[in-house]
Length: 340
Figure 1 (cartoon, helix red, strand yellow):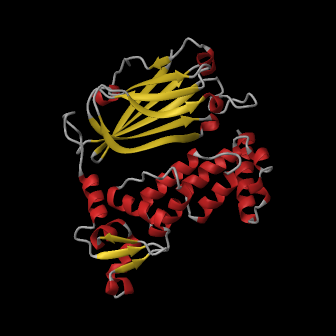
Figure 2: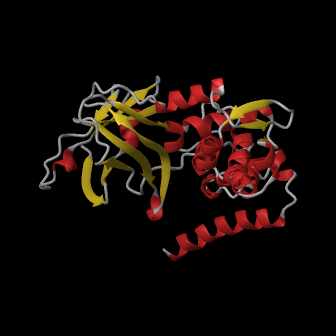
Figure 3: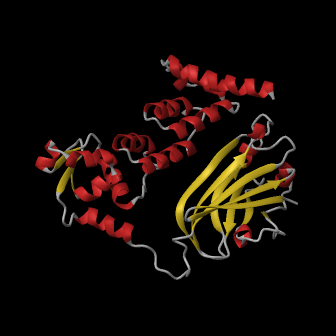
């Protein structure tokens, strides 16, 4: 039987609902091949706020040996929310697994949130990576509900603003500036849209600059990357972020597109391996991607350091500061563990 703890608080126009789901003896649950689904029970709440019992959770076990665990949640009401899943580790540490930005959630329909892997829960050498000292798995869910944009009817048509702006980019209607890639590819765009989305692009049109006089912006980006950046600027979407996250991270940093930068960090985190950990850490350092840097250092710390020192990326490291940062991060964790 699992343990559920619900709390909620209000901040301005949003309500933050936190659910901590603790599943004891989780490895035993994984080893039970007949278990294909595990849900939270209906909570016996004393909380007078009905939001406390709004969300329900479940796990689905996939694969012959329950190698894949998919996490879902359900809301009885249609809402507009942001969801965050964090895993609670030993020594009071936490690790963010997934962050999904605000989107509409239908009522009484299970929503996919994240995937966990059995190999991450029980490491290759038998270490429990994601488990607490007593063998339990503890997940923290945060559902941030926007009260002022709450959806009252599930049949409301989907918002068309993103599609309309994408059409505006594609057909170039009423464009007043040309943006060129490094190869010379031209894109008909709009000053107002560019300036509203990027402080760097805004600066091109605020003063007596060459761009302001010629209405031509020369970009240092390749056409493939510039096209994706413009799609993001116009639609707030990044359809190819998983294909070229390294290049898009550099572009997002250059044009100060913070949300695109976060999407790139998430994509690079998902692709993190022993072989590319050093390159990813160098990339994060180069573009001030603090979240990616932190997640990569945690990856190295979690029993991967010895393997990483045998990779080609490690052999090519020339930065003493980078090696020092890795060493200090690992040693600091060990010192804290000895103190506790």
